[in-house]
Image (cartoon, rainbow over all chains, first blue to last red; front, top):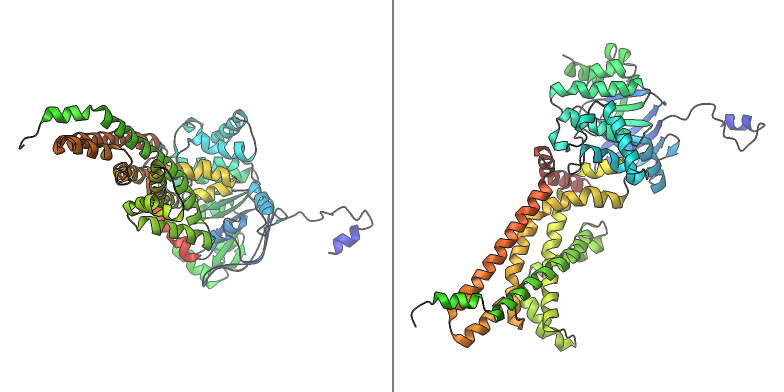
Length: 263
Length: 243
């Protein structure tokens, strides 16, 4: 890069950070399941602090896209960088990326045999070597933030879906991630519980968290997203600011998609 | 002699010689369960391994020991192996046979338990940077174990009764000692009534223990988790179909 050579006069060993490293950078990423192409030459760049909503019809590769970012799915071809670390299937890089990212799943995936508090303290204690009292303080801090500190001693099965999902968010935050990945976080919820989860996510967005959300909640997208990424058949078909995307979708596929979901 | 003597049956029940046989039966069962679980766990891990040679070896083991009668296995170990110069004591023969056989059944139970833990649990563990050991020890094993208890209970019940086959290779457990008493006194119904009572007591005690275990390990599970667990084999199947 020309920037590097220009900086050479200053001192060659210093890596000039003229432009900030993006939170996520994907270049020509492919993912196949047998004959099915889940991701088809996907390019995506997410700046630090940016909020992205990924939408598209089912089977379009939205979930696969964000599941590749923390290597829960292995991409087959292409490059993925997370905070400058290349996801190249090496253990130490995968670990580094997973430490930087938190994930919230559609089906919550809380550990059903542990209390809410234990769900939140397990990773800080075992993966970060925190003491039990430190981990408990941390967990209570985030449980308070998602407004359910009073449920700490209950088991996940005793909570409502909305409460479980908020616990899942708190559990992920306990690892102090720099990027949060949401995989249809409200799709498994009863309608009256969607709001409490979205409110929690909005609060997180206001605090400057980098977020990638796969969701069909277009109200949330309009309000929170900096950019909408629309996918179809494994490809990123278009990306635009919400205003632009909802008013003037460029592709025919996005137009029919929006007609279907906005009543 | 066309009558049944209840007092004789009761006296056989309290017969010291027979009671010692009961202890041997219990000992054989406990040892075979512990040994079978350790070996079975190992075989289950091999069976789930992505290495086709290891998985194939485990599959062969399970196929072989579940596909042949325990009686033949015991007789081969006791009478057949000495022909090859391999000799064990009677009790060792019984234990080896019971453990090898039980391990094949338990391996399948362990494997199905792990497969029934939803893939989402492992994904959540990865996303949280948990190490493979912590994921196994704290996330998957406790959930798999809870699912294993009912089939495990069944298998142990069968095993308890299957120890009677060791009588054929002259292990003096409950069945063998009943035979010995019977041959001495010819009170067939009375002796076997006592033995039957002992087997029923042992299996009933185990039933009670199993219920306690189910209650203990099921305490945190609510409707939600059962639903997730129930849908897991389907999810697993689709993952396998993809791979």
